[in-house]
Length: 291
Image (cartoon, rainbow, N blue to C red; front, side, top):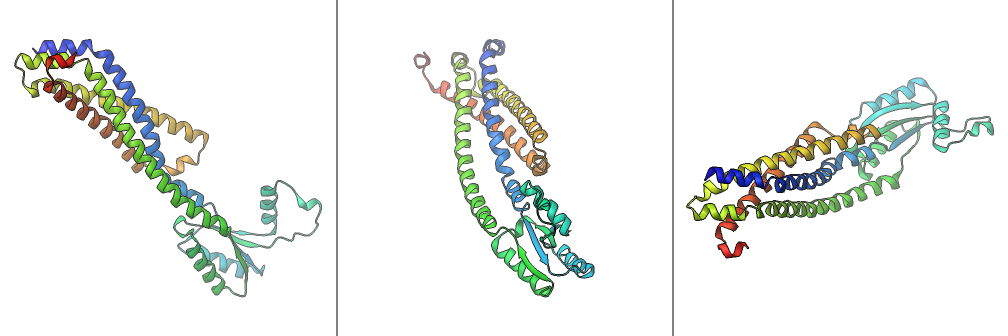
């Protein structure tokens, strides 16, 4: 009886190959969405922490400027604090505007400033308002103005919230589609084994005896599909990182472990569940219904 099951499984290998490839492709697509979802906050934080805040100073006294710079650098919200003198300000302006106005103007009208970037948790209207008020209060005589793109901060936070909700809904819908797709793929692969299952039942084989080799095969197929998907996803991430190095700063080891572990659980879990459900279905069916 065992040899009969083994030979039948061997004859249905092409179906399993198609099943493995089909499940791997679906898991790969799910992995891309999963990577984006897990790194969505990091992507948003990177945009927030790229907003420059400029504290324009009235004085050129190095001690005063140093005191302001030291004060800002000591705050928990600040990162990459830098003193921008007139020459640096001119170089930044020329780079951003792709022209050199020094050929027209002899004097440099740009003010000196202390520029810094706020950490992502502080890049919102309320926090930045408190930050600017604290700096102006501490150095009211020496700080002329504090500027940052207020409209960009407001729009960035509003859009980040909307994108998060939209992406969550899309991920849930995709997850449902993935589960249904894998389930249908497994059931299609099991269709070729329906006569084997029924024949073994008719000669007195127990449910566990019939389902055990099929469930083991489903477990192995799920693992193979998951590892193929992980390999493809890892290759895609590495390629994207080589093209856009900023991506390497977004992903963390914990997120990658969660993602890869989730793909393995999803691939194995659905494969085993769908196989077992198919076995029960064919065991309950009459022989005439199999045709």
